[in-house]
Length: 70
View: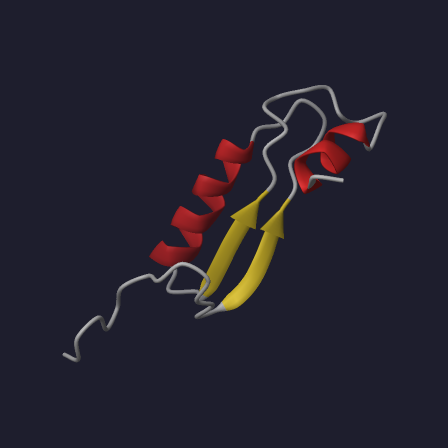
């Protein structure tokens, strides 16, 4: 095996990119289940998520804008 093969490197995309955005009062921790199931099924996914910290964000985009740093 080559040096570093099979290891994740920050910024390195190895599979199909997936952005997980939880619903109202959702948690970014929910994406771990998605990533875990994809890995178990052998699906090459790179999963990123937005974490609203279970905030009630369904009626306003303010929480998303705050996380985006705008």
